[in-house]
Image (cartoon, rainbow, N blue to C red; front, side):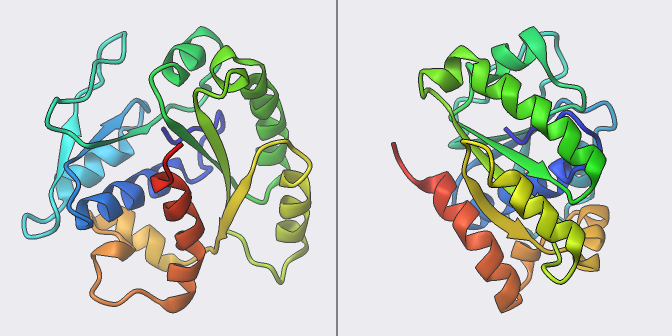
Length: 204
């Protein structure tokens, strides 16, 4: 699950890129979208037929349905404002949760409360689900990004990687493709994504 209570944190960008990477690596991928904007579902409708297939996971009901049986990897894009009983219920169904955080004061304030809530849930306390933080739209040359990294490092949760801001991500989400669908990936992007991909496929 990709989760952050604040909208605009990069959840959908992460969700579609993760789904695409797993699909490119021969997994049977299902992508679900709980967000009201349905950004990842729209992205999926725009995806070209010749690209690695990603299946739609219908999660429109009140309770999260099981992913289709044939699915080997399920990616869930969660809604803004996720907390309380809904968050706890979803955590019980997940293996890993990726939390994107952008370098803005509002994102950091919202994330602090979210991290505290995550740490207090039974699933996290009993180590049944792994939580990983991703710095989004990070430019190490800016003070805002430096402050973000310092902020994230104070929590007892791993800062898995930081991903730079680039217009190519905007184009990807708008057109049904991702960086992983390209024949060549920029070495910098590959280097930034590798820690997250390694963390996701690591077995307990």
